[in-house]
Length: 418
Image 1 (cartoon, one colour):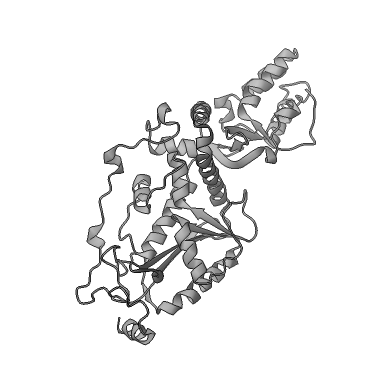
Image 2 (cartoon, one colour; image 1 turned 90 degrees about the vertical axis):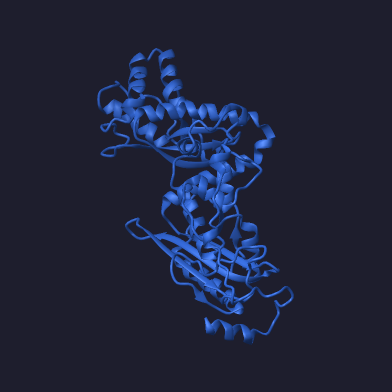
């Protein structure tokens, strides 16, 4: 095996655990074969004394999605290189073991996405390898029908990588509009998280609304503007929303990259553009790592679809939170919806790799006949409505259709009266 140290990248776990020692054995290097097998054995690899994770009770590896959409557990080339020199320095081999064949090395361009993953014990690692192989076989059954699902799975793993970096700011935004005229915004909610120098999460929530009775919903859409649960609502005029959202975006630029978090982003982005928000450089394809600056979209409905294994449909925010085990109150309030959208993102992005997380959350719910699709029972999918949080003020009847352009001065006077 040629000793090529000029390249750096990743090696498949199976190549290092199976193919590398077998190649050494075929070359008559039984001592080296035994040393590699011993070093990378599941329990030894996770032993506290293993030099790949000194003084840390877990090992960090990587999950990569190859260009053919297969998922593979990976070591970095640095980890493999360190192992071979450690074995030599400890007297386990007479000479440093030659590296695996260079065509076993995966470069970054060979991978659609790469995300970190940790294991705390050998059994978990061993089981993970089996599950990865099983999931790859399930995914391959879908053929071209799984293209949308693969895009969602890739976005999920990128979101995990970006969240784990603890850089930039994740900013969830939600709007509510008048049921008779969907371009007339009645509420704006934001929920943001960034990290301090010690890696501690810092959250901020805000809610702005038109006064009660101003373009009030209630016939076709719940009006819960007075049900904000995470602070004090600020009453504003209709023309104030443009300045508010621009100030919000400018404020969070100080943290570097801004990841705009939505639940089904299409309508919210339309509202941002309607308000002339500074989003001309908005990117919908997530980066592999957190850049110094930029504006990117994260969609929790898409991420959950990837986790659930659905390439076509998307769930409501209420359903997503329910299935993720996040208690909610007062939905259909822009501030509350933004808060729960960010919490849904955190629940998924801070969790395990997608396939492992799916099994952890919903054990024995993924069957071969359904590929990687989670099959929920009717009882598990049932959601109890939060009707007790539905706001209905009898003294302030909804404005009738056709009054959307009434005099702004009346709007200001009513807002002051709140």
